[in-house]
Image 1: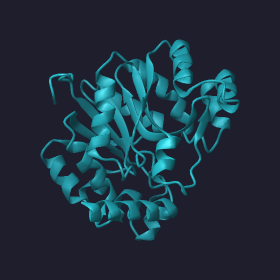
Image 2 (image 1 turned 90 degrees about the vertical axis):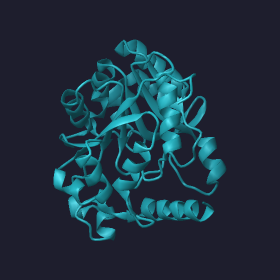
Image 3 (image 1 turned 120 degrees about the vertical axis):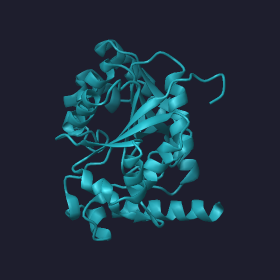
Image 4 (image 1 turned 60 degrees about the horizontal axis):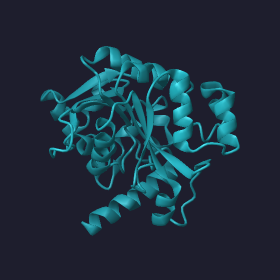
Length: 272
């Protein structure tokens, strides 16, 4: 870490629960007992996620929120890192909000806490470092990573993705969040309904209220403009971190995502 960066590190929460177990469409591709155990380009998905985070100059302890510890013990690198005290198991809550609040209560000195997910198979150490540097260089309560649609379409012009279309263009969530104070964890209550706001717009109304729903539907505000509105409403400092990485928003939610992610990882390996 260079002298211009803060010396602070972050603790990391990886949300890896899968309610469907072996019946999950992705897990079923390889007859796995859990989605996070599938292999992508020869490496178990959750192992890949943890390995990239662990290599970050900012990451200290890593906590994995999942149904059972024995699932993690099936993953060689993760099991070894658990024995070394670098990775820790946390029981998953009934929803995203419960998992995040449960983690904040269970982790000693949890802040700053960066939250990621176990199916972000294309996230790299570089992406994680970019996000952490941005959140640690100014006083914030919370932050959300988003990639501009233009960045994604430049890399994948034929890609079909649903963007959050706002006054400053389209955006896509990267499943990377930061809680630097307890205020941000309280604000995470919006995820009690499960997230997926772009796919289920009615959840925007229920989670954020009518003004945000109108800003979103009619593109009346920029992405940071909505964050500023919520900052005032919730009395927190919330920032959108723009990610210059086309792959950052791609996760493995379904078999189509699996095929696409597998192809991108193979191409990365071939290109060195």
